[in-house]
Length: 288
Image (cartoon, rainbow, N blue to C red):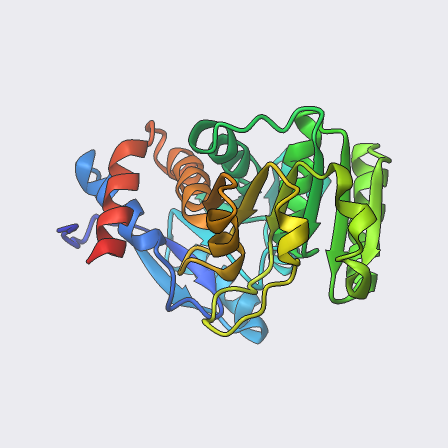
């Protein structure tokens, strides 16, 4: 259990989201600060969409060092910050803000965090693989960009709102010059022919966070894939339970959460993140 002490000199970091009550980021970030004896603290901050600009202004007003940005703010927040790193410029999403003397710079650590998680914890190399992604929100933009950098073969995307999936495809084609991408209408996502050569199935939506959420992909299609990744991390989703029953390797969002958070930690502190300490703290929290 973290024993972070708040003082007049303590540097503030945290996360903007709505809702935010489920966030586990404070657990591992504060454990990392404590382990390295850094005078930092990390707090969850519930920010409604209508208040996002005011919240970003508060970063400057209160001289907070850095903020993570999660659902539903990753795209909208770009309007209110001063500068973007190259990845954020290309993908149009930000999940990390660093305040340097009142100038706010945005970064995207989700994609790199996802790839590190997939390779290091999942032992799965996406190179030359065919990917099926559920969802077209901010996390999808970051994950698609990172996968394309890993030289994947193809991407299939399905999303409840078809227009958002189209926007994601257009963005990828235009910004990343990757053309082997197909949009699947949500109602047709379980057509068997789609699943003949899918290697990696990724859920980037919030479906699965609640106990009664449905299984979006049929079991007979899931059993054809080689790896399943669900970025939901507050519970074992039906998708992951199904993968487990089918003996398909899988990861939940905890792994990605820690790795993307570790990159944010390094941006804010200039120190190497203690990954093992971060993982240990979060798994201990879940088990208690």
